Image 1: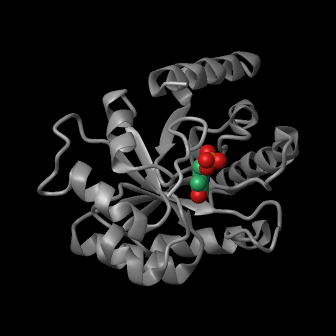
Image 2 (image 1 turned 45 degrees about the vertical axis):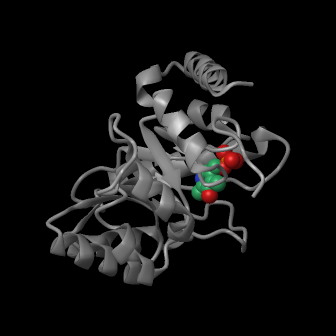
Length: 237
Ligand SMILES: *Cc1c(COP(=O)(O)O)cnc(C)c1O
């Protein structure tokens, strides 16, 4: 299916999920995850109006970032907003800050410290999602829900970043319904943090939902969905 058609199809499914859950389409932002595709496909996604791009490894993102947003860019259209969605090594923070607007994978204080330090140097405040391992799978990154209050309360010391929401990844499975309790729980955790006013500002964002489970995520309150395969596709190396 051509890209334009896939984008329209995904949009239609988001609208339907919004309709089922009484939400407005404007509450849901789509991040086109380009980690599996070439620069060419990334440029096509931009031409087709994708305004948010997501990558999960700096090594893989660098060439695309340079071509789209670097000083010698070959993309002349409107600049996308870049989202760093993968686990972030502390020594890669210096590459990412100033290039990626959002970081979705804040999962430890040492990372918060480095993001904040690098951001302050550039005069930036980086909006971050705290990654939560709701499902408790060992393979998943993110903080255990039990340690979130303490973690969040410590973030106030890092003025170069601003926590805006929570992010999670649901377990892989053929059935999107297995993701529902995970997404529901993430929203409850967000509400608990906000009720207790653990952070100076309430968390407004939920980054959850991928190709296999985005409709369920929208029904459960996602404000950012991260779509790779279903939207821009997956190309062989
Ligand atoms: C790869 C990736 C996605 C997109 O995955 P698809 O299933 O292809 O949509 C979303 N979020 C994260 C964190 C990823 O690493």
